[in-house]
Length: 294
Image 1 (cartoon, rainbow, N blue to C red):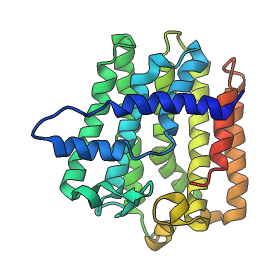
Image 2: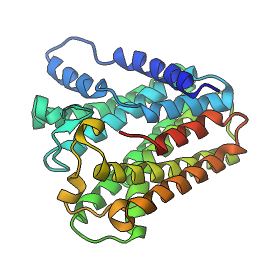
Image 3: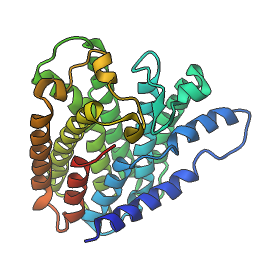
Image 4: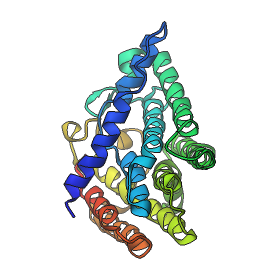
């Protein structure tokens, strides 16, 4: 398996589909420009790639999941716009570019995020690549990840407990909601899009994979906030320490964090190794994220 070639193939599919979004004209053109600015700002597109590749792991094709992949990236982009706002993390740089509120102003960035969230569910519900029943299930999967028992809950705890010394259980809970939840939705959306029905074991394996992948991803993120540079990351470093946040790096130190990233990555790989006939790409993706530099 050529991991880089396969990743590029999935990434290209996503980028081409996203590039066609929000190009209509109208008196709200600046709102659409703000949405496209953040949506097309780049990044690894991990979540939509997961959606495509879980669909492929089940049915042998990525295309049935393309609308779902676009939707999960729209939802992710909305969350980044809102996370960067002055009332949240107050960041000025994202993916090496000014954040949406810096470029367009706070009120327009807020609306751009709102509109992207709505567009995500519109894309799911209206998909012609999948059956109406699957589209309904997909909306439920993404809503669960985004809402009161997912990303919003994680962001709430992240803010309300800022400056407090947190234990590992609470910190893990925050990031199971804030980070793992959307990764889990991405994986499950791929299974939902597949014309082949996943078994209960495959569904559970995807959930376990995403949870472990999310924890490894977050621990690595906390490490990079300490040891990387703003140029490498494309966003400010040291902001967690400046805001008094407890991170995995604070709790464990960098050496133990490296061990934990490896442990969670291995658990992610083990969870899918027997559930799918061809888990090689998904395992290689977990390994690549464990070693990422940005």
